[in-house]
Image 1 (cartoon, helix red, strand yellow):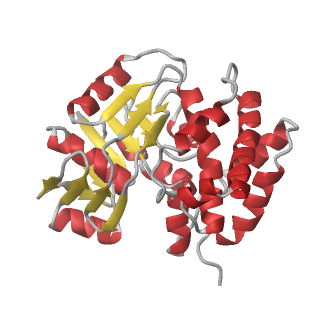
Image 2 (cartoon, rainbow, N blue to C red):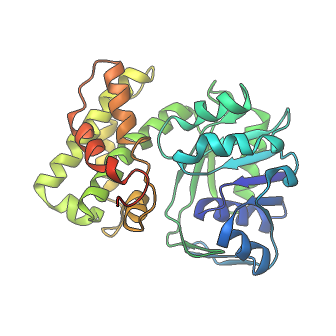
Amino acid sequence: MRIAIMGAGALGCYFGGRLAAAGHEVVFIARGAQLRALTTTGLRIESGKGNLTLKAVEATDDPAKAGVADVILFLVKNYHVEEAARQMLPMVGPHTMIITGQNGVSAPERVEAITGKGSVVPGVVRMPASLPEPGVVLHNADFDHFTFGETDLTQSARVTAFCSALVEAGTMSKISENILHELWFKFIMQASFASITALTRLNNGPLRENPSSAQLFKDSMAEAQRVAEAEVPGFPKENDLKLWNFLGHLPPASHASMLDDLLRGKPIEIDALSGDVVRRGKAHGIPTPIHAVFEAALRPFEFGAPA
């Protein structure tokens, strides 16, 4: 299987590395220091599920040189979605499957508007990963969930084949019974988790332990839950309560990657998280005052550290 990784960050290199080690033909689309590391010293994964070193990997900054792929893992940040989707068009053939894995719920439709109807399969990634240095992925957990599926709820041959490849590569991957529900289930938590940890500069543990911040967490997820129920037919009730319990099982030191980006002076995904809750709430006449404050307070950091 010819697999292209569009967005060779921590997640892209983790799944691409596992697939390459399992014998698949993987090409990483990267740039800058990450590209130099991949093409000179290779890729190293330090993981609770087992370390992996690949001395030689295929990588380029030019999608046209990568050729047409059977599968493209599209794992760029939300603010690069349209630009990256246009850049990867040379890799998209009539049977190419593009699997998105962005935070939020808008990326699949935004990519498909550029690459063509039926080309995109939405995905949800649940795992911690970072790049402590170019060419090195740190995965300090024993889980690496990657769930994806067709929006028409069918178990297509293309989805089944790629899921089998990921499972054989040692990852905890599965086909979703309803991927839109999965996307929104994660979105309810992520929009709140990202904004609260970024605004407070605090980890999950202190936020949950303080009664005031814990209530803010619950109320913000309840806002997003009401929007989800209006947006997605048959969306299950009280997911926000289930997600609060899920957060209780995360390590106390956990926080959203948006906090890391903010502290490093990098752009943040506020528009695709709390910003999207606010926009979609307005479209349905649903008040979202908490997320409106989150969005307004974090907008100055949207394109990196303000001057």
